Image (cartoon, rainbow, N blue to C red; front, top):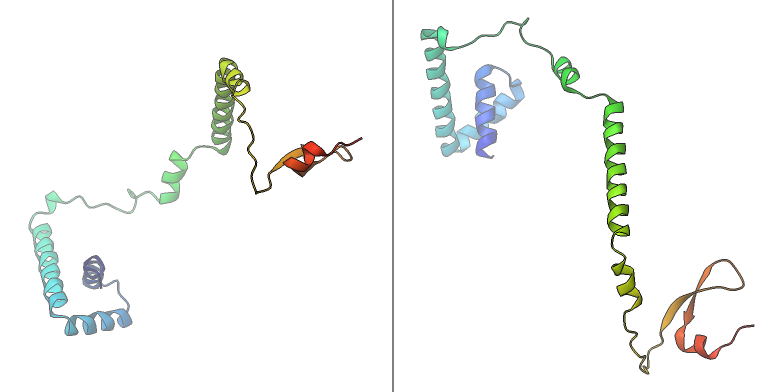
Length: 156
């Protein structure tokens, strides 16, 4: 058992929040593990001292009444944003990103010039077949064409 789990189990046992089956399992574990038993005794002593300090100095502890504690639903509702506001933020972000990309892309014409001016490397004879994508003249789709055959073959 991890030390964090042991701490939580001992605190829950002290608070009376464990079921009887879990209490039996915890006691069986503590009886077989001396290090865990010592740690549990230390935690129980800390809880006892804390209880005594609270009893002696109640002015140091703020106790909440049930009327002061707000349910989690009310807190979530207070801080939750409406769905339309989230959708508007996503649309605005998308529009700004698209406009920025278009502006940056249109402001750099040298990128397309560099791509068109790239030197074409001469093809070397190779024992391996080479392929490329080409428009199919018989249909409106694409087809994979072997490069050395495509150059020799003449289509009507």
